[in-house]
Amino acid sequence: MVNKNIYEFPITYTNPIPRIALGWGAYETAGDECKAAGIKKALIVTSGLRGTGIVEEIKGILKHAGIAADVFDKVTSNPKDHEIMAAYRAFVDGKCDGVVAVGGGSSIDTCKSIRVVAANGGKDVNNFTAHLDPPWMETLARLKPCTIPQISVATTSGTGAEVTSWAAITDTKKRAKVLVSAPNVQSTVAIVDPLLIRLQPRNFAAWTGFDAMAHGFEAFVTKVQGPYAYGILLRAVELIYQNLREFTYNRMNKDACEKMCWAATMGGIAIGFGAGAGIVHGLGHQVGALTDCHHGRVNAVLTLAGERYNQPAALDKFAAMTRAMGIDTRNMTDWQAADRWFEEIEQLMKDLEITPGHLADQFGLQEKDLEHIVEIYSNDFCSQGNPKEFDHDEVIALLKRVMHNSY
Ligand SMILES: [Fe+2]
Image (cartoon, rainbow, N blue to C red):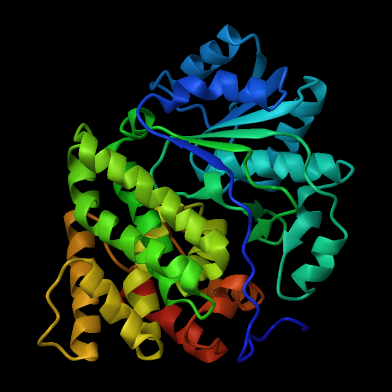
């Protein structure tokens, strides 16, 4: 495994981020953005967002700008390889020349995957997945860059996918959540509009908001986080800590809603600026692949166990996040300040009605699947960047514990 280790003086890679249009009414620019990107016929890719009217609204805006559109609305959470290939066929059959994602991470990442497949001969999307072994740099060298434009209209304040250079999809044969990428895979433009975000149902607001929080703290404590991402992440943690409760229970609070939008994109940007994620996303992805549970929810559920495991390896960073939340830590040791972060996160989850751990009861996860989860995780970037080095037996023990306990 050529790039399995992070050396004493690692090279930091940053990924390009798209132009971002963030603000009230930004979605109305979708037509002009398509035009500017040269799109004449778009494939709108979405999970449907039934009852919100958002898809119909975006379709109307495109029509007004003179852009024809087909709609592919069969995306589900943890988007499956066969859904992506069906969306790709809809793109080709419809003679489309651009994609418009309308939704959360699943729709946005399906669009990225369509473009990777289209740029690389229409082969099955599972040919373009990133792992530690074979080394990603070797796979990347064989990939042609994406050329089809993508406008991403985010409807959740959590995913960050609208600004990242990776797509998280499900390889249904391997029963694994995998990352797909290629040069130029990032959205052409990311549209983040609080008007759309606040139409989320309450549980989605909490779960996707916690996903943003997980990007904030995981990318902050990771081994590969550097100065580019440091300040962005602390600010993201602060904004989410201060606004997620209010946003979850009062989504018409425009200030809380807007701040969640900023924080969600900040998490995505920081991940792309070299920070990556760690054990919470790494294990959460695989639980999602097996049980199809919500990505943000499973990250929340694994947070206390995953980060308690990491605490000794990143004490100063947990203490820094407690300070970023606005808590006075002047009379605390770093251990005490780090412990306080866990107390605050546990309370936040309680307030959001999220139960930590209990993977068996909450998601139906079975003990026989734990070895499979850890095997996939061990070859994933998330295990590489996690502050505490990967140890098979320790991770199995952690998972066994949270099958029936909180952490
Ligand atoms: Fe995430």
